[in-house]
Length: 332
Image (cartoon, rainbow, N blue to C red; front, side, top):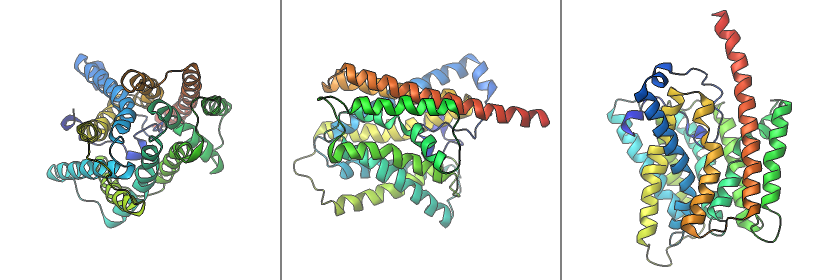
């Protein structure tokens, strides 16, 4: 799967829930053949399960590894491997300004957004973290509003549903998003949304080279953050933590982004980004089955509200893009 998908792929900022409005074209030949359909189903299944399971994998790794010392080798190793493979395949090395742009976006998306999730999951369970992170498209719509992108009525409805889910999640005497860890998990999708919107204004490396550069720089910066935070090993690293980091490197970073790149080339963006509504459900199920996390009615209700809100916003934006693309095609 990794090798087959090392063609042109999306930016890393599109890796978790961006609608990808700029990719209206669909490779019909990939969809029409039975082999193409099988690959699409396999890729979708990979994203649903893999990206939904990364929250639990991070929680396992955090049992004996501090947050940034856990995340730093994950992205440094994945970024290095991806960069080397791309260079061996003849991909041109980015220009200095492209490295700087990738570093800036990688800092927001990985060092801040992903790093905050790692920090938060010391006390916030994986299903709750996944539900909050799923609000990223809602934050993109909300922030875009302040940047002059006026939302439609449907998008406002989606925002209301999604943020109601966070209110429900934070209520009651059970799970809550209070304290430093709760604040970190709420700030994570906001940082990702800001980075995603800002990336549209920068000149970034093309395709998976952008992913490689962001992970490389973020991995190095995460070691510096770990040093500044005074992180150190207080006990021997467990075998399960090492296995979890390996899973995050191979499956979460390399295979996950490759499968997503393939889906963007072979299907409509609405299908490629459907993982955004599935991942929270998968994370809740895995956390309950493997991690003993409580699957309460409050969690399920909050997840349902958030998923509905994200679905409304994503579909609304996809329809708006389709409406703009069709007249352009007719003119040509």
